[in-house]
Picture 1 (cartoon, each protein chain N blue to C red):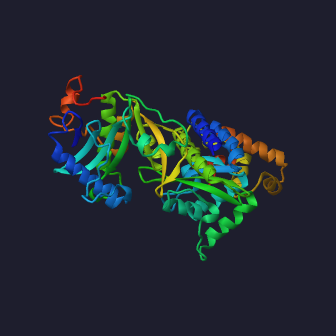
Picture 2: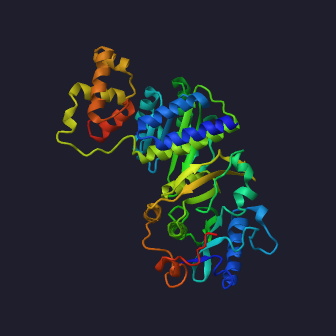
Picture 3: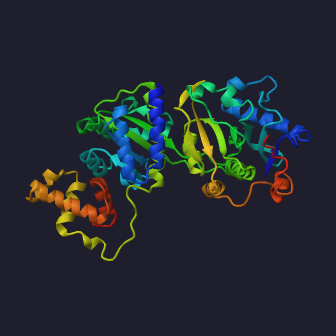
Length: 245
Length: 220
């Protein structure tokens, strides 16, 4: 017990001192070895029916193919975990959330996640003073947390949310630069479109009759040009800049 | 407006103090169900309500609408005498520049909307932030629901947890340190969209703000 306590307080100090989203991601990845999760994401609960995950995304370390699918299908509007975050301030396991029998899309989301390595997760609801809610979720094929580990991860999640919020959103609204949208080539945009449709690099290479490596290069170059650090952010940024619909 | 009651003026404010204990009963016992604090006389008052504590009360039309109690950590306080187990073996900091912030609340029955930011609570938070700078304190020891780490951080306090959250009397509680910064009061004002000071200058804290001697705010 005392071990988890001290380790958590040390991690909190490190997260508070983090200077970049990448640093927070590295710390949370390290903490995953202690708490037994592999993947995580921090995002605000949608405040309107028009919002998608990237609109309130703070930190993203889900499997890329799951994140892309989740964004492309607008799952955030139907995710029962996100819905539960509105109702409680107590951390919970995804598997503890009751899903209505007739909530078909919610059931599908929970049914699909395990295939992407997210069999279960621990979600920390964060309700701020202005009434907005956010979720910090930690996933793995299976999750097994002691009471102390739950308390520790609760505290760590609170600070990961604060730190990532103060470092700015994962998808910054960039000022439009001269020739902004034209900076990506037609091929790069094509690859982003397929990524937005949930296709992996390999699937896109099959569709476009390119090598997988070429597709990856296009996506990497596009990400660099748009200042994105991963594929979800790349897709979101391309949408914001009007490169794709 | 905000009124401060401390060692210097508690005698002449006995009537207001009584209304404060009634307010605390209505808020913490009747509304928030802190059954351990229930008293037959309908006044929520404990052994820490002595001359050493500082009462920060928001008054509206003669009615107490918000409140905080600040206790010196150099004397018995909740961390040492009520919640020592919250530290889970560690030692909580204390000292003349550190007070304990307890019984913080604003009348929910005065809220116009459940979702909008509550200006009554906002003025209470600005009042404590201003007072902290005035008294030259480093900050406060607090035991609260973990949600308050986020809330107080949003309001411009630097929050350092002292132990993991644990269940206490059916509620999750975490002990933490809230460090004041020169930006705390302005950040709080910005969050609540408030301007100026919540203190009523001619009365209340006024005699402390105008001259540098800060009478009435003894740190003992």
